[in-house]
Amino acid sequence: MMINDVNSHSILSSRKNLLVILGPTGIGKTELSIQVANHFQSPIISCDSRQLYKGLSIGTAAPTPEQLSKVKHFFIGTLELTEYYSASRYEEDVMALLSKLFLDHDTIVMTGGSMMYIDAICKGIDEIPTIDEKLRQDIFKLYTKEGLDPIRNQLKILDPVFYGQVDLKNHKRVIHALEICLMTGKTYSSFRTNTIKKRPFNIIKVELTRNREDLYSRINKRVDLMMEEGLLEEARKMYPLRHLNSLNTVGYKELFKYLDGEWTLDFAIEKIKQNTRIYSRKQITWFKKDPEIYKFNMENTDFIFWLENATGLRSLNISPLP
RNA sequence: GGUGCCAUAGCUCAGUUGGUAGAGCAACGGACUGAAAAUCCGUGUGUCCCUAGUUCGAUUCUUGGUGGCACCA
Image (tube, rainbow, N blue to C red):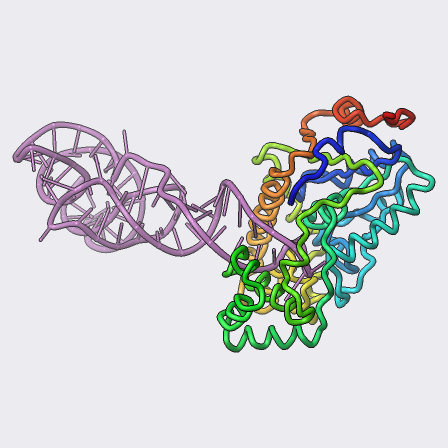
């Protein structure tokens, strides 16, 4: 995407601020963001594509009831597992919520690690129609029956531009592009504007970091803790719904293999740890290419002090630039 | 103590009729616009146990060690 206004984050042109605390899973976002939210007298907007769902609190390391009682959280445990959701819906929901919250808050805290959801808020997503369920199923049937070739061939004819850009081995991308072409009669690429939406508030993004070894050992320990807290029982409850996309999630998909009898429990737990580590790495890779992100090393202590110095964000927020 | 087998990547192991080596898994790097904790792509990271020979050249053959396993005492 093109960045229209590189400096938009550093020039505080509005008195309203969205403070986004992001970082890889297991870094310590939840606890820190509660402190920060308290400091700014702000609720927390969660930016986590799995904590959104009901019933996944242990496996997604959602805020505990105690944490939830300290600060008002939005988008935690609000969706049924069967409900359709997307980064685009999230953009709509959050933008609507923010326009209310900013009426009586100057700084709102958002926290989470779902990369595309973060970008949906900070950069926006293009207006692309939602796919009709029947069409989606038809194309998926074709895919399972005959593979990706016929889908690629249709896309090549209907949208040669995107065909030249897309990862042709990634069936999700190829299929979705064709869905759009067939549904709208336009090319998928015509919907991709490659622009960043300008928001009527400042966006300050802070990534929490640690050295790799510490992050991994925190992740490994957290998985052991989840098992002690009853992750297996949580997964067992969800087992009948295991084919839902919302349950194609680290922590559950591995335990389903155990419940299927394919893996031993110990192996499944090792896989949860491994897949969580891999996920954290993908998050770090994604954040790496965003030049607007400030970095805060979790070995340092006073986050608020650092924040005000590094970003120019004032806790009292009285000093917008002209 | 004796005999036999083994020693190669982080792990499990291939392999080189003598020309300094490759698979799986792991690890690492990357992509990403309505399923994104999803999905997809790329990369070999090595004192081939040590030592002394033979040889133009030894990870490969020979000697002697060291470590492991098995059997016999």
